[in-house]
Image (cartoon, rainbow, N blue to C red; front, side):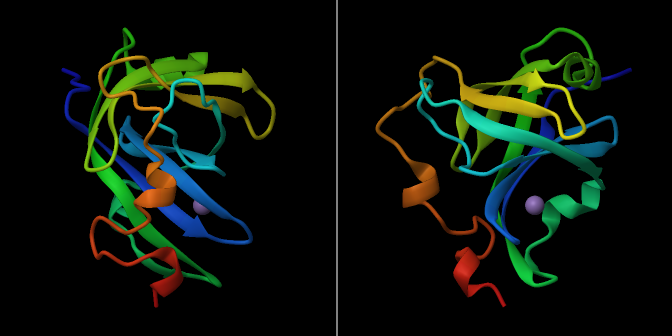
Length: 157
Ligand code: MN
């Protein structure tokens, strides 16, 4: 029996060659993953590019620290539930998934929509219009700290 209720999500800010946010949803025993250069927006008018990258092991959701020449912090985490019928993996394979986040910084409905299905599939991550939408918030800018340690990406050692 499958349940997609209360499954984990994590958003890790990652300083690599460029600074980006890795948005990860637990599904099918792995972390389905997208690199979001600008990070998520709580404004439904803001469509944020999300490039699908390789699945990660579930254990990676707890990682924070140095990563090669770069660094990773756990910017937000919590649970999510799908708002799309059927298994989450099938929705992702079909290129459209809506879901509800219960994180510390991010709450509410979001949609991931695939727009280009090449070697590095491009998606858009967009806040849905609900009571948690807020065009005035800018959590990427105003809430940069790790929810685990309180550190910013610049101070990770
Ligand atoms: Mn990354």
